[in-house]
Image (cartoon, rainbow, N blue to C red; front, side, top):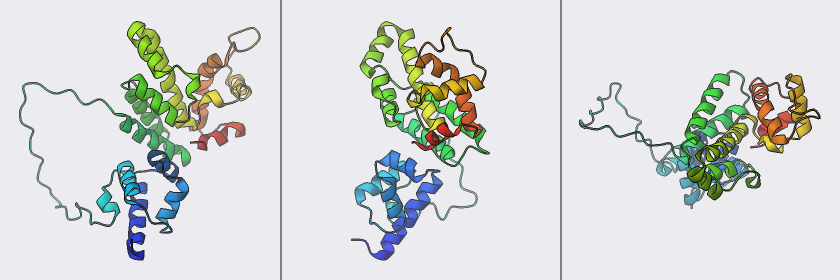
Length: 257
């Protein structure tokens, strides 16, 4: 059982860890599965935190569980001029860098989520660079991991092929499989910049943006289908989101995640 002083210290450490990681309570909730309201109560010292939750919070924020529970920081007394790191032993062959993990993708997505929640004013280049980083990391993920990330971002799993189907296409029709993966990747990027998957936005709202952007439909009677419309209007919608120029009926979507 924690004392009141222990609870207050743990609350302060958890809040500090979250802010230093650049995460909103919503982003930390997504990363840990702990509700944003519970995180708020923990940070305010209104609720004790279990050891299991401390471990989840530590992993998500990059801190140690021991430090979150009140231990001193191991690097508090660091010399002004630390000794240089030892040189690695010479090797006849250099090992290739490890591919990015799903955790790496989540970490970068949380950065964009935080920027979006605070408005992109003054951070547009950082947001765009982080999106490019996410896109590059997603290119390394196999279908199962890609689908897992898409599901975690609220993208309806019934609107794209199953991981097994994509894997079979990659093995039998590589170009088609890559197209499936690329389509999911861009939908994940949409959730980062817009806070929502464009496939759940009303087609009428997207058609209005297409018209305002001077885009011509691909058929005599309008857009042939929603997928074609989304592909055409996506760059314009992203530009508007980054510049805080989305129409009111789309602005609320920016905080959906």
